[in-house]
Image (tube, rainbow, N blue to C red; front, side, top):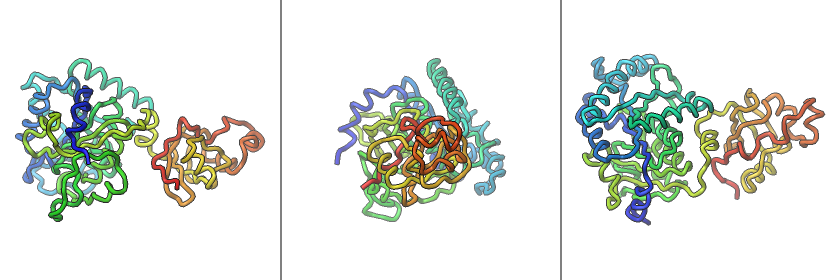
Amino acid sequence: MSSQIDHKPRLLADTKRVVIKIGSTILSDGRGFDTDRLRRLVGEVCDLELAQVVLVTSGAVAVGMARLRRDERPKTVPQRQATAAVGQIGLMALYEQYFAARGRTVAQVLLTHDDLSNRRRYINARHTFDELLAVGAVPVVNENDTVAIEEFLHFGDNDNLSALVATLIGADLLVILSDVSGLHTGNPTDDADARRVSVVDSIDDTVRAYVSDVHPSVGTGGMKSKLRAAEKSTAAGIPCIVADGLNAGVLPRVFDAACDEGTLFLAQGDRLSRRKHWIAHALRPAGSISLDEGAYRAVIEQGRSLLPKGISDVEGAFEAGDCVSCLAPDGEEIARGLVNYGSSELAKIKGHHTSEIQAILGYRLGDEAIHRDDLVVLRNTAT
């Protein structure tokens, strides 16, 4: 098994644009928000003198809890949103204060899933980040918790958001700071034989089997969500390091080519284009299409477009251009793509040859149900 020292000199030499995610469990000391730790991390970021850095921060709810003098995390969505609204102002004030002391300017960027799932807004967001970084500002990103609902349930302590932001801005490296020292072969809290994994070449079923979540009292993410974030970033060609942000000096060690810190997830060779990564990870499927065995093999093994002939079933209500899940004959999701026809149209032409589309619908928008350029295989399960 390789060590980080085998990879980091080349990796860091090419690193200019970095996303650093700071989790809730780092910014809470068990009694409330830990301002000293945030000040220390801001100092470490500034000391690195990175050309371009974006922070994805949790902590709005934790700050809100402290300001509202609440000991227990709010349980309902309205309570969480209200607490986040109170905390967001205080959180950004702290970032502004600590960065200003080091001569740096910060910019607040609030995102929801819709900002990343709408292609036009996705592109506009990227242009905004590019401009902020060009003028030397440090964008501090958080979910727009006061209006988002499903994000509380799906982003997982901003781990997923950090991977999407890294892809959005074309980062060279994603660093996720948590309260664990990296991926372990077991749960280190109850497994004395669990050892830290220095380098993960690819995230497979063996790596996934290492993960067992311990749900924190303040944050909403665990190691599973960090593994999913690493999987998304590395699929986009962006390496990821998960390290323990509770330890002073963690960032200098992460960016030291001679230091083995946390777990390094190597970028995958088959880099997804930003468009395909957007399809695979930023969009919510509006429905599903079931493939027959022939279409399944054509998509998985040959990288071909999906034709109406290979569709056995259509579920959900969606329009042309929407994202849908593509299901294998056994029901497993194996791909996602943008459809050329809506659900009502596909229900009529499924199982038919392309030469029959005109006669069935009275028009033909194209031969493919999903063109291969708009189709992303999520996992190659063909045997």
